Image (cartoon, rainbow, N blue to C red; front, top):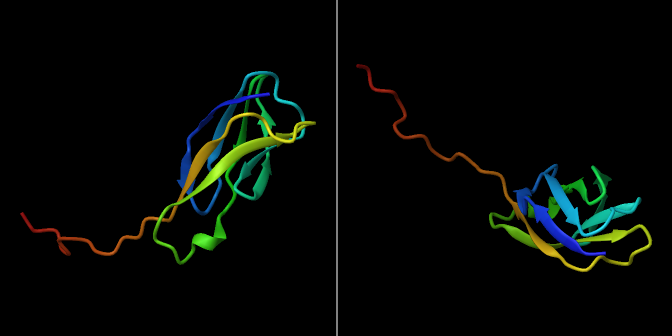
Length: 106
């Protein structure tokens, strides 16, 4: 069983990004995506494609930098499928200033 592709490979640290998974053979039942040490279920769409949703990454709350974790799949009788990707958790965008503060009158 080989993990051929995953997309997108980044999303907000609040979680909920739908990550499409492409396998070389039918997606077994009870497969899971692992984002680092966090596991979430894979929903099969057809024989070789499924999706999972990225978990919230609470450890980033005070961090202003991206966090990159390994994305793997496992379960369904397999310890781990061959192949992995890296998923980037991105902190939220914070609006700090608006310039100009007023819209000029015309």
